[in-house]
Amino acid sequence: MRRPVPALCLTVLLALAPEVAVAAGPGVTVDPSSAVPGDEVRLTVTGCEGRTGAARSEAFVADGSLDGRGEKGSPLAGKAMIRSTVTPGTYDISVTCDGQDGKAKGSFTVVRERPPSPSGSPTAPIRAGGGGTASMAEAEADDEGPGLRHAVIGGVLAAAAVLAVTGRILRRRRRPE
Image 1 (tube, one colour):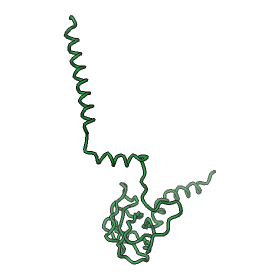
Image 2 (image 1 turned 45 degrees about the horizontal axis):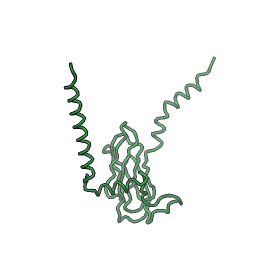
Image 3 (image 1 turned 30 degrees about the horizontal axis):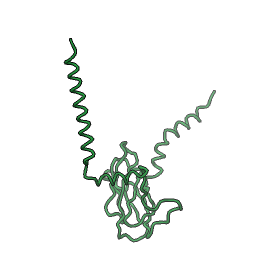
Image 4 (image 1 turned 180 degrees about the horizontal axis):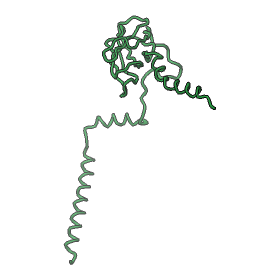
């Protein structure tokens, strides 16, 4: 006779796994975790039951608005702007979910200067795409519109169309029915 205890234990563990994952702790993830005054940071919050929330910190210009990705209980995400006058240091974040305070907490660091980027990483926006056509498009945007050359080409095409239609009409009239 088989002993059902291992199968029963496995079933109980799998049934409790979602509660264990939720109990692992609500929290706030800040990206980047070290920011400079004036930066905008992305916030991800786990452990909220609702679909909306707000993240508060002394370092933020205003509360960061948080929204769920559709399903109730899914992580909330949003952005917040760091005050340009904030002093460097570690700041706490408290999250309100659907009107309930303190549902999640976290912290992040404000630094005086942005850490140096690894070599080979861009430090400024890169003009990309089009293989140089962007400068051509800018040059064409400065034009006043169709010029004399375009008008002549349009006139020639219109005349050719009139001749073709007229020729077709004359041929039909000449045919005996």
